[in-house]
Length: 287
Length: 315
Image 1 (cartoon, rainbow over the protein chains, first blue to last red):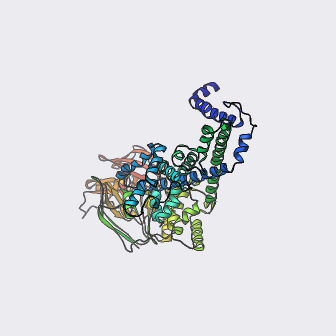
Image 2 (image 1 turned 60 degrees about the horizontal axis):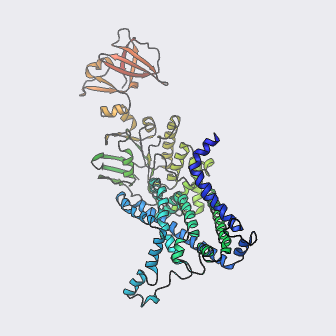
Image 3 (image 1 turned 45 degrees about the vertical axis):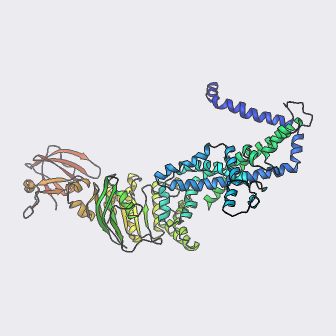
């Protein structure tokens, strides 16, 4: 009976066990110095010690956190507002508004190039500003992409994440009863109050899911930072890449240690985020 | 405050849903519009609530509704805000109008008392029964003192034994608050019990608009009469059997409700009992007279099948 049950679940369990659990196990082992391509001569937790005592790790960690949080917040906010706007359009225009899904099929790296082409000092916006006489030369255009704040990456992740957030929010809006909005209006609520008190609570679950997924993706992804990141502080993913491929083989456990720390952070983040959301919702319900 | 519907018409593409609907709702009056499902009753309410626009005619308010005194439509399934407690649902309209906290608390408390919802003040809609949800929806409307209250099928989601109680409660509430109210329903008994006036909506037209008694006992057409319940047709040639004085009347027939006919045991009576069925608070007799079958409701159970009887119409 049990075997039959496990067999039925095997299409799901096998990839999970082999790829996910196997990958985490291998990464964790290598971070401790086991199963490395070359014999590791350091101590058991030496890689962790070296990473956690390095100030550059912390600056990279908090920089990645900032880029991920800001871009996910912007994507969810813009995605929710746009989804609401599209949902309120007449049915005919709603079909036309499906073009919002197009950026979903663009690879992240393509979005990075789009941002680069538009917002770099030699990009399209800068050229337009120059041709309209707003700036005198390339140097007059603010260095948005490499200002030290990760604006380029934030913009790229937000652009890529917005249609994704829209898609999730739209799925809930399509099941939303429009009579709730009519009732709120009859009861005298302004559009803003109706949106905040009636619509937002209904789409909040999709917003939270979108935020968690987008945040964790941009926290650890490599493609967009490879095009748009700056050297200092660098994104964690770039640090891992450099440690693994561009440094001494002996430093590979450090790269693995960063990956394990990132994984632990992701688990902790999901746990803390859902707890905070639940608590906030309960507090709101108690008022 | 009163409102007048003047020649309202509504089409959806090529289908005419409402045609030439006119009636008045006086101040402090409760009007019900009765009709079968799909006849356009909810559309009519939406037009009064200005959630839909008519293709013809207009709704005229003696003083136009405003944000302060709006028209409120209570939907069939109440549409409470699911993430808000009963207290927050009721106070929603007051908060939207930026009422001061003390006055808001005072008003909501009064509503909770009046609508017997004190025990549910912190509960969410999902935790309430259908009757409680309806009371919350009406309280949420009443708390802001609406110009007109519209009720869409107020008995549709209630248990059978709760319907009449609710009808009486709605009537009492409406009289207490004095807000002109229009209700649409297909529950006849409840509409009769609570309404000052009733309109019969059949095939998109208002067939008759009158007081419940007039409507029931003096329907102006067969369609209206049949819609309101079983009706017997007494042709002119049978007037003498029923004791109908047809002199001076031009009509070729009289419509009579089952409860307007009296059965009398008569050895050589013109009719005979064809069928008897027990219906709880009355007994229904099918009486054969001439080539017609007449239905009579009475509480007397002394008649037997085949018994010869006389029929009398009570005016």
